[in-house]
Image (tube, rainbow, N blue to C red; front, top):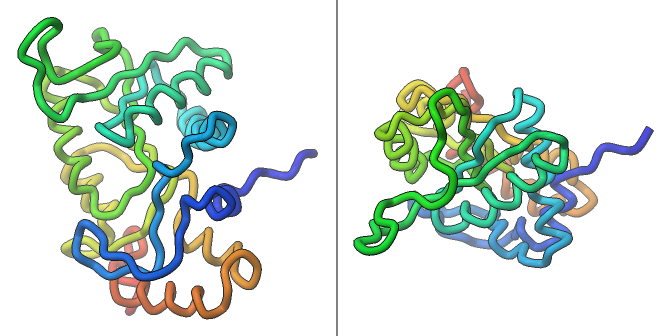
Length: 220
């Protein structure tokens, strides 16, 4: 039986998981950063999309893959292709940052879901869910049946009162699924791709900003 591929090792190998000092959109100072936008070689990008496609298939599949502009656009296309290769006809859809005022006007590009068709929103990382709320609202405003948000990595961040993922699920009414969590990746690669010094910095950050789904902060 073939060994299951590790998305953690893949992200380190491709440089999509970086270690250092980073300021997140939330303003938090993080010792690591995930950016799948650096994966722009065809074979590697397809591998990333296959990780996400496998998670979508695991939760029941979908008819349409939606990607938020900008990084979500190639992800939506790639994941739709990866899912179609698994034997199901799947479309892609993405939004524009600004509404087009000429030609095919509107905010969306791609396949507009028909009644009953299921849509999954894909992205590289879940931090606090800020921009995802806007996209969920956009999709719901046109009557889309959004069944899940699927990301490559859940940073397991703390929101206003505990888990940011749980808060998003409750407010948006959409479940969030991830290929991997930062805790899982760091624990798996500790002492190998990730040094003890980097791991210790991760634990310090997690104690301050992390939250276990359903249990509040890591630091009890």
